[in-house]
Length: 190
Image (cartoon, rainbow, N blue to C red; front, side):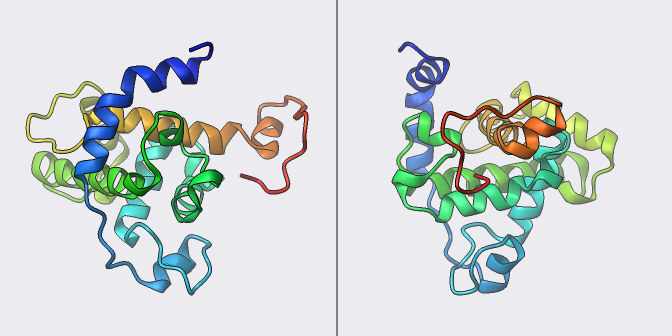
């Protein structure tokens, strides 16, 4: 446990593994959803179109600029990869690759449900003020009717993934005017 990610993995492993294992992913996604996020048409996107839009919307509140940086594409591509090539935060928290899609699906569905129940509209229809209020309530675990992994943990994972996309790439380093000095240059953006 010599690293931050190692510590986080040990601390959150129990809650993440138990919750992710309980979430069963849906296979009702279509090829058009895959194309929309940059996957090959023969692949099914691991998340529905609404989940993908909600993902980008919420991540952009957590890490401004992450939607434009491609957080939805990043997460859906990572979910479609083999376990040994996965770069999502859940990988470092010890969540099994097979359980990751269920974790994201359950979290995004719960975010949408909280918007519907507490704000009487879709998360995507919320204005900036109400979206920030929703995110603040989720980060504080204020909703008793939330289901799945704790909302704050779900947003912790989304924020970490959004930070990786926004600031962990060569383009991200350039945005903050910092030289990208990788020991080994990446062969792809993420």
